[in-house]
Amino acid sequence: MGRAKVARKSTAIDMTAMCDVSFLLLTYFILTATAKQPDPLDVKIPTSTYKLKVPEKDIALLTIGKGKVFFETAGPDIRMNMLDKMGEHYKINFTPEEKKRFSVIGSFGVPVQSLKQFIMMDGAKRKVSGLETGIPADSTNNQLADWILFSRQAVAELHSEAMRVSIKGDANEEYPAIKKIVDILQKQKINKFSLITTAEGGS
Amino acid sequence: MAELDTSSGGGKKGGKVRSKKVSTKVDLTAMVDLAFLLITFFMLTTTLNKPIAMDIAKPDKDEKSEERLELKASQTMTILLGKNNKIAWYMGEAGKSAPEIVGFDQVRAAILDNKKKVLESSGKDIVMVIKPTSGANYKNFVDIMDELLITGIKTAPAIDDVNILDSEKSFMTQQGIL
Image (tube, rainbow over all chains, first blue to last red; front, side, top):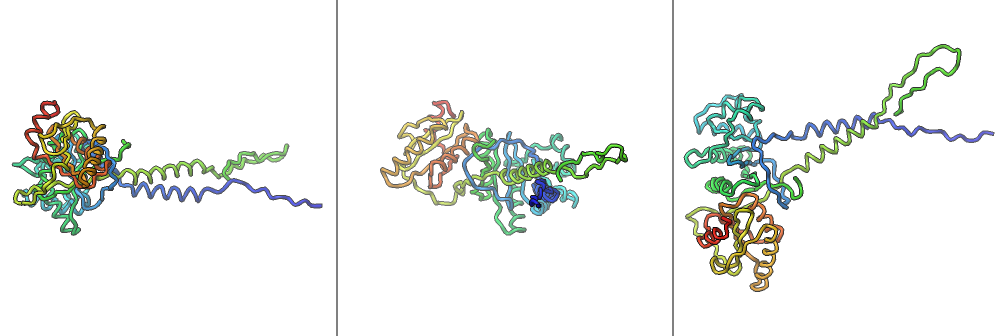
């Protein structure tokens, strides 16, 4: 008289495979996440309710804060091409190594004369070197206008696209400082630009 | 699986002393939990932290261009951005109507009110003229552009930081916001 025995199954599951997959995904996300470039110029950007995302390609970013202007373009190829043109214009010879190093620098704010020295520094030294005085943008020494012009040419040559210009301004920056930069843009017939903001409610 | 086998091999007395058989299986639940938590974190931070762009178009500065858009005074609302986060606004032509000074929390009501009035009286959309003065800061400018979006102003606003009229200036200095 055999009673059918219900086999007792263990509830524990083998998690090895799951663990493998999850760590694979984790690794993927960590590697693909673009490391946030430390902002050399600390700005607090204003909030808005706009929903438009900033494109990642063919864009130049002007950071304005504390009366200084920093400049950044997206893409190493654009940066190198831009530096070539800039060097030609200001009669500065950049070595291939310097070009390569420059192509990974994000936002920078040094006069072109001290750029060579700036490029060869380590990331940590750059901040304390005191070289980052902002890009000169006066009417007599308007390097910013040249940077913008050459980056636009580089984007047009390499990607056949029109470059967008975006402005990332500090919320407490005086309006005339912004106006000065905008006037430089308008001189080059850039009448449309994007202002970088964060979502309302966020930090 | 998933738990450590800690039971000792020996149950019988007087038998051979057996070495403990320790299972090599480790409980992975906590590890998987952690991994998924991190995955979620990275997924969210990579996509959600994108900045947002506000597209602004300014009038062409070319002196040669003769194209000047005439605006009907009755349809125009001029907003002057002053210092201390204050706004002065008036309808129509400068000097004819006294500007009103408001803060950023009341400007929305004023815009909506004027928008309604213009639409009722002329059947046309209101045209906004934004004049940031030297006293304003960047945040004020972004805020006012944002207000225009919130209040649903469809016509492109005219951003004019050059032609700030003397009457506007004197009014703002009087009120201490320039």
